[in-house]
Image 1 (spheres, helix red, strand yellow):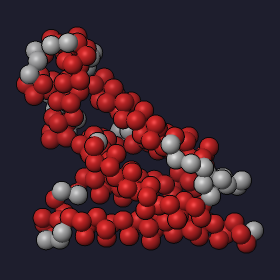
Image 2 (image 1 turned 90 degrees about the horizontal axis):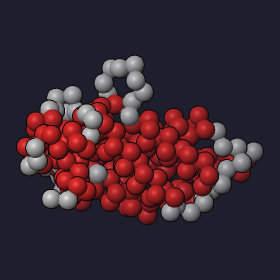
Image 3 (image 1 turned 45 degrees about the horizontal axis):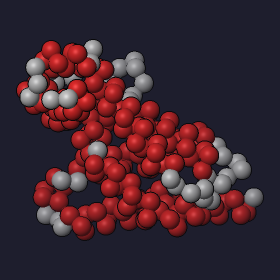
Image 4 (image 1 turned 180 degrees about the vertical axis):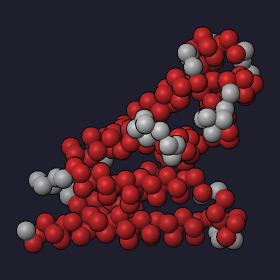
Length: 202
């Protein structure tokens, strides 16, 4: 087993165990069993369970930043119009990382003095967004609040509940996805649309 392959197996096993048991409830022994590697090999690659989570989040944010960097510069109006296409790309990305999104959300809900992990995702988005949106009056505080509460949290919740909601509420999965996409369009999309109207009147 190559070192890189072993490291990747450990990371993938950690995602599975963290998602099932929560980060706090997971033990290195369980990651060892899931990855089918000795515990000593885990400690060879990572100092602690915390470092495993940190590596997972850093790799996720790097991939997320790369995805954002491919988005063209747009006005608020263009963002509202292109939202369906962008959502499709974001959801494909999110589904690949749905277990990690679940871990980030659970970890961010802990009562702690440390900044929630999800803020790091938001910071990565804002860093790209501030360069890509054509808005002379860019208000970073407004964007943070709007993106977080009408974009980030709803999308994270969707990824976490996308498998169980259709079964529990007896709804076709595609219909559920379409209804959610429409809800985002009517809330987050409306922000961009209304913002562009405001710009025209100023």
